[in-house]
Image (tube, rainbow over all chains, first blue to last red; front, side, top):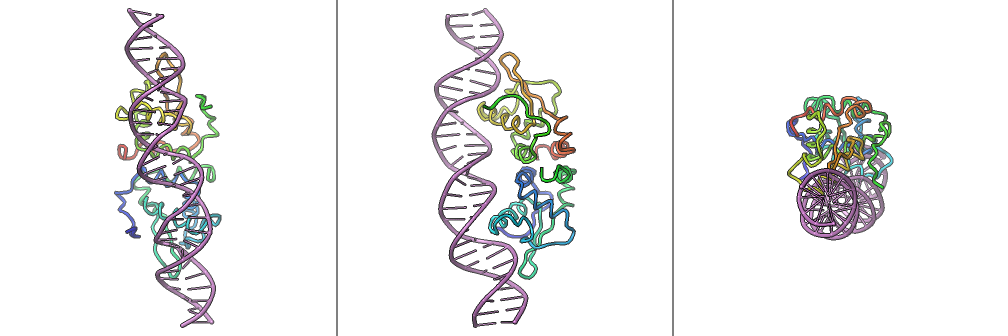
Length: 103
Length: 103
DNA sequence: CGGATGATACGACGATCATCGAACTTTGTG
DNA sequence: CACAAAGTTCGATGATCGTCGTATCATCCG
């Protein structure tokens, strides 16, 4: 179970996306993800929370289709699926990320 | 508690808005609200769910700042605060409502 | 006044959530 | 091999959620 393959673009569910983005920690992660062009390991995001909580948040983001992940050495890299989200829900990510900083 | 006055435009919280919109029933209500220009009583929305559940959903929408309500006789009218939401989170409502019908 | 109508308040229920710590796995490095 | 580093898994906990039924309140109309 809980495989790492990203879900199809067409199957990205709006409810899941909105729910994923409704959490400030996850929105923070998405914002950092969107800002940094180069992939970074999971551990470099949202340093205020525990490892297990971070794992949980990344799973929510991944299962919602917002993020794609792959392993690289001992680290796990993440990439914001901005193209897919933009294609499926045009303007959504821009408006969420463009709002007052983590407002 | 639980007063009916709408919250200030500047205090509309993105987390609350996204959470409110993450529920399909509430998104359905918002979509109907956005479609019908004339105010309609609460009871005319989302007929599939119970009265108490509908009251609950309208409270979530109101406390998130998405909806304004006022009494009119025995009915309670609702209005989508599109101007305020658009001002605070430009493009958000459009992108959510513009997605595949209640997708 | 007495119904009828539209909506809220009040539990209550099962489900999900965010968070944590401790144990474990995987990978790289000495 | 042994150790360290990065993530995951596995409960557990307290909070919140969506839904419901019933009781209650407010308002209108006869």
